[in-house]
Each structure stands twice: as structure tokens, then as C-alpha cells.
Amino acid sequence: MIPALLLKTGRDKSLRRRHPWIFSGAVARIEGEPGRGDTVAVKDVGGKTLALAAYSPSSQIRARAWSFDPSEEVDARFLRRRLESAVGLRAQLPAARHTNALRLVHGESDGLPGLVVDRYADVLVAQFLAAGVERWREPILDALADLTGCEAVFERSDADVRRLEGLSPRTGFVRGDRTAARCAIVEYGLDFHVDVGEGQKTGFFLDQRDNRQRVRALAAGREVLDGFCYTGGFSLAALAGGATRVLALESSAAALSVARENLAANALDAPRVSFEQADVFVRLRELRDRGARFGLVVLDPPKFAPTAAQAEKAARAYKDVNLLAFKLLSPGGLLATFSCSGGVSRDLFQSILAGAALDAGVEAKIIERFGAAADHPVALEFPEGDYLKGFLLLRS
Image 1 (spheres, rainbow, N blue to C red):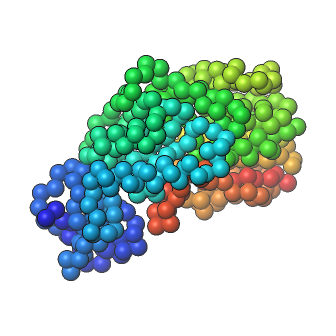
Image 2 (image 1 turned 30 degrees about the vertical axis):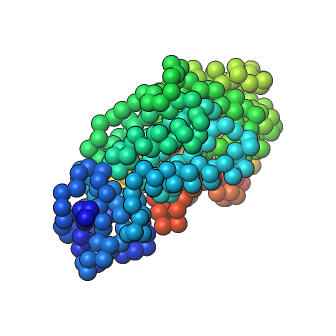
Image 3 (image 1 turned 90 degrees about the horizontal axis):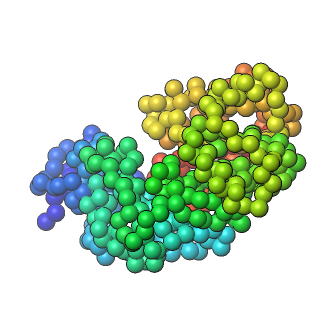
């Protein structure tokens, strides 16, 4: 018999709605002695098993549900079935015909809590971010290599969340004989170089794929400002879409180096784009003071608020940077603005933008809403998976 977590009275409601997280405060007691990542039965006060979950003694998320079918057995075959389903879903997406870079596994929304896997051409990048998938790391790696046929797997288990799970960071190639951590990918006819070893997240923002295409479609004949440009995804999309000029700002010299490589890899009019290393907040103020104006501004800043506890501080940063963007927009200009902060809801982000427009003395309307690309699905019962929020705003 496997160990069990017995829930407190009334603390089973979210689990009955199939939300996969069981917090420490919901646990009344533990039967048995589960180790980190071991499978436990999660039971209500009457002793009925509601889910099978991965135990994490160090985290406030004390267990993450593998399955809500008590008759299932969590083993290598179970994990392979989940991986087959996730990989098969991506193969059916329209984007698979236009790119060789996709997210293959998106954690809880694919029934694999804490596992992220991105494919860049023939290289997989895997993140093991929770105790359960860490426990099954080797069978998961074996199955991924077999199911995809990729020549190498690079592990990027270096996110801060691992510390909350009591896990140490780990990076490096774990499958395949490969020395270069730079991958060449194609996205809707544009070539990009992805540094899977040092880049942010797993090396590239795959979640913004559809939004880059939308910016590409909107950029024709406009002067574009790309704040927080990273390795140039939005900048190159705007250039390919016919932007008259692109000013791309980024604080990371390493990211800008890759951005320039990406520019050189494409048959684009390079003189129409300027990559500048700068503090974006400072540079936007300088541009405002100079009276600069743009027809399209793109803001895709880093995560200001990983959790709700940082939401107030993040709100100030989002308001400041968007206020400056409104000041830089020409009448009739467009602002494509994003938040990837889990602690900032879509409603809160909209409220922040309304305050920024008011303080900037402009009127603006939402004409589109943005989210993550389809290879980042969101399970209905797991709203936390809907982390990327964006709006396309028209300045009157």
C-alpha cells in the first residue's frame, strides 16, 4: 500500500474540481513515510482516494496530482503515455508546419506537473521543476529521446522554483553527443539562433510565436520601438513585416549579441533596425524628453511578479513603463504590451494599463487580447497555466 496524505475537513474542494495542487495547509496527517517525489494517495476525511500525487516535503505545494483515477499506477509506462499524448498534440498544431521549435510538454496542463520540454530543431530542452518529475527523471529522458528522435537533450533545471522543492540546480547535456549549445531554428520563414545553455527560460520565448506574427502583420509602414527585445524576436518580425524603422532596446549584452546574429541570418534590410544596450526605463524617458514618436511600441518585459506577493511592486513597474510607451505613441499608434507575471492577473494588468493611459493624458482602446501560443495549452481546471497576458491598444 502506498503512503497517503489525509486532507483536513473541507479542504478537498479544489481537488474534487481536479485542480492538481495540494497545499501543506490542507494536509491533516501523513500515513507512511513517503520520500521526495514518491507517489502518495490523497484522501478525504472519509478515507476515499481522490488522486495519486507526487509528494514534496519541502514545498508549500505539498503534492502535485498525477492522476484522479485511483486505479492507475504511476510508473514509467504511465509517464510515457502522458508524453506520447503531449507530443502527439503538438504534431497536429498548425504551427508545426511553420516552425521546428515547439513546446512539447507544458507541465500541469499536460498532466506532467513540473515538467517543461521545448524542442529546438533536433535538440530538446527539459526542465524538471518539481519533486515528482525529478523522481522519474531518467525514464522521462529515455522516453523523450525515443519519442522525438532528437539527437540531444539539454537539461535546464536551474529555475528558482527548484529550491522551493528542495532540489539543487542542474544544467547540461544529458542525452546525445553534442558540444554546441546554440541551435538554429526557423519560425515562419525567419531564422533564429537559440542559446539553450545560457538564454532565458529554455533559450527562446516560444509562447510569443503567434504574437510575433501579429506584430509582423501590423508593422508595415510604421516606426517600431521594441522594448526588452531580448534576442530580437519581435524586432525581426516587425522588420519582415515592413516596418520603416525598428529601435530595439535590451539591457543584456549577451542577448543583443544573439539578436545581431539573428539579424545577420536573415535577408532583411539591416540598416532599418538599431539594437541598443540600455536600461529600458531610462532610455524611454530619454526618448520621451526628445519628443520621439513611434507608430507601434512592443513591450515584453521580464517577469516582474512571480507570485501575488510581489504584485504591488510589479504594478508600479508595469504602470511606469506603459505610461512612457503611451507618451511615445503617435496618435493612431499601437501598443502591444505583455505581462508574463503569474502574480498579475489579466484584470489587474488591464487596470494598470488604464491608470497608465490616464496619467499619460491619452485615450486608448483594447482592440485585441493576446495569450500564449497553442503549444502552451491551459487545462480548464488549472488557471495558473494562463500566465501570459497581453493587449493590443490603439491610441486615439
